[in-house]
Length: 205
Image 1 (tube, rainbow, N blue to C red):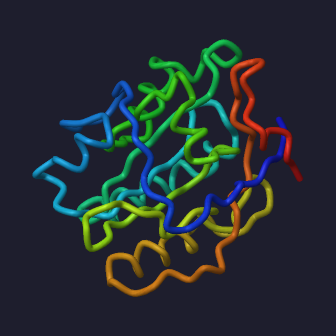
Image 2: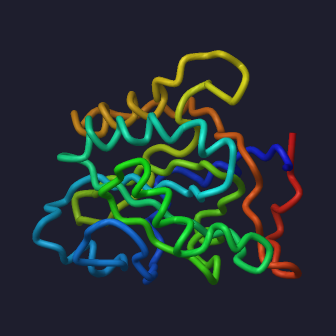
């Protein structure tokens, strides 16, 4: 396990294009275009979570992800993405992700980024990572928050309360600016396909 921080994708970055298979949850869409067209999601903010089934840092935050869905799921679209290499980590394949979602009672869509294109478009580095997008006046979803859920990490005994992300989502829903003082998430490095690592791979703490 390599302890890795977020690269902190620049704020206002537009939501990347994606079209990925749905492995768990319920949604009429599995692509950016479907999301934009969906009548069930009238210009809702979008929370993209880069997670996986096996990572101990993800397992640590699973209970708070469940609480986030309960507290924000009516007003924020939650979307989980797993981008780990299935060559090196087959436990993060369809069956592993589906089992994880079922155990946690997650209803939000869980997509498999097997080609790792979305993770690279988001400059993803670790699991978990959180990206909160919100629609501009023209409907384009742009990045308002990226970074940690909160300061809790496995073994540091700080409260798992989602404080950082919850504050950002609350501001987004209220139409008020999100503070740009955002702390990177820290976790296991994304497991890139051997020989296809992005330029930022290897940056660690």
